[in-house]
Amino acid sequence: MDSPSKIALVTGASSGIGAATALALGQLGYHLILCGRRSERLQALAAELPVPSQVLCFDVADLAAATQAWEALPAHWQRIDVLVNNAGNAHGLGPIHQGALADWDAMIDSNVRGLLYLTRLVSPGMVERRSGHIVNIGSIAGRQAYANGAVYCATKSAVAMLSDGMRIDLNPHGIKVTNIEPGMVETEFSLVRFKGDENRAAAVYKGLQPLAAQDVADTIAWILQRPAHVMVGEVLLLPTAQASATVVNRAI
Ligand code: 8X3
Image (tube, rainbow, N blue to C red; front, side, top):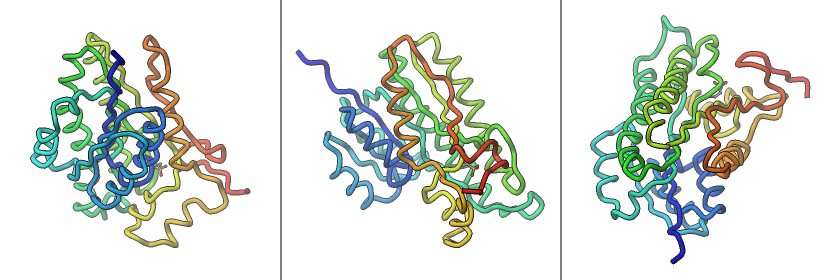
């Protein structure tokens, strides 16, 4: 009998890195669980996939909704081989003494709590089956703080430390954990950070070629294709024009 297809669950799949990753994994033959808040986009993505998929519409920061969606999945869809904790965003950019509390809460909720909730739901099955791979989407911002980004940077630093801790806890169970730390990626990221201000968002990438979501998706696909004994623990993925969180060559 053929071995069953592998299943990947991707959060934040309605756009950007999440959508590109779902497509890349679909091309590798993974069956996909697409999670996000925007149902129409998820349905459109599901229609593009060459593989069976499930659409789960919920906010990762809403534990009750996440649990309900998870429990409603048919049992065979709960056998997740790959969890991509991608959902997350930056909200606002400003000095700590002027920070908007609602923005802080939103970042902590999606970037940290959401990642934890999904990991808590999915990882017990991985442990039971002694197999699985958790891919967290961190950021260069988790390594280096930059002006006006303290809370966003702190949430991504949490993702780095959580990834390390998860790797240790799941080590006895044969589960891989990867933290991908991209630099500048042109997605809706800056548009969300600047609350829809297209000019400010475009200025972030002016004069340089940022990464595309596809570049991150290609990297995840490559990591997942390594042999069973190889675990890529972390990857700092940058546009060539970016040397650090703040050193960027805009001379192109
Ligand atoms: C996104 C990268 O440098 O804008 O996480 O924080 S950065």
